[in-house]
Image 1 (cartoon, helix red, strand yellow):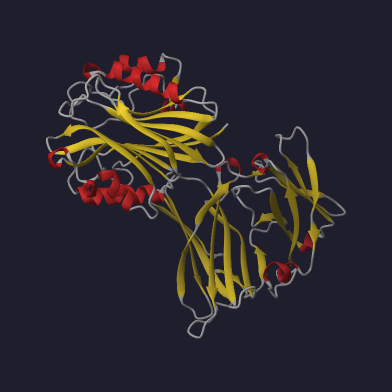
Image 2: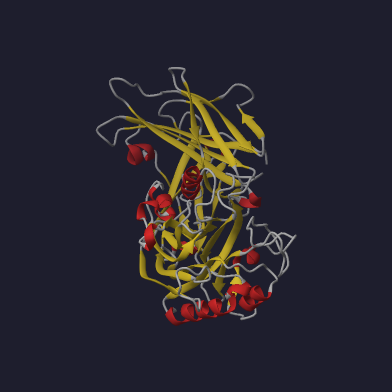
Length: 501
């Protein structure tokens, strides 16, 4: 496919509310060239004023391509008229490249209250479909745009909830008053662009397992929309977990970096954050909550998370140093405790771990631990034994996963790492996604303790998941590097996504 193409534009003036409004919607397909993308719709109404509307990722299509969408709703007022007829073009920026599509230098156009306009010469297109389920949702609507020139006689949704072991059929209907019923709009069905809309509904208690394709028949042939051989489905709810060692207030431009961390958590839609070297001023051992680095980051999120934190020992002769869990979802069964032999607050090898039980929608309850263990010579082995025993003791039948997250101060391939993986109980989730050999040393950490010990790249930050867990890792990436938002610590962060099995 081309790097980017417009599939359809929708232009509706609706009167369901007391205020007359106009909604503009754009649906695109683009080649997944790189992770960091920017897609914009440049548009202007009848006033000739050009505006920029950012598009957002919608869902996956076949062959690794992606759907993106954008919409804006504007209200009629004494000061502002509606856009009316619009013209527009699309820009896609990725990996220092920019791709522009502007209908061969003519710009695309859409007339006011015209309904939906197919723009890629397609005869059949699934439109306005949801990519994710709402909690408790048991019904989904499917709307199909057909080119009138195809002379459609029958449109059918073929669907399954058991991976095509059995198939059910839902016949779609065509109604000329579609737009009036949907939005109190005067748009016609079919409209002046020769596009007509058919619709159907699927009702099932297990929509999270739904897959479907669409067929359209005329007197001569049947055509299909199967999402470019990918089938349509609801994306499973993704759980995103970030781990990061904060470096205990030792960074230059520290306050700015706290802001960068918070913004990245927002931008990446992270659900759970496990932090190490969380610090607050010592204050004769009483601490200073307002200076707590986990609190500061949490306060700067667009929506504050639930926070559980505790400290272990005096850090850098100035701070109460500890660990924290931040979660979008409520915490329960919060606990903390020493896993080290030493409980001396003046001993750097006094190590405390925090844990919480978290209910994640569509997944269930999980147990999360945020840990910062000592080096091998500082007591790692006994600390991990206690941590592993603790995790096992609180696991109950309703726990879907146990995740040990944080800075373990063991390199991949070391005897400490082998102690973890050879237990045959926990698995390194970064390695589970990035198949590079069991004991590869992958990413370098700028930690003074390690600089003279190893010349190769290595990791010491991990998410270890119990092998009996009912979720699986689906992606993993390194963040807070010179290649993305920049360094914020002497450690990189690791972002991993999980979904239910």
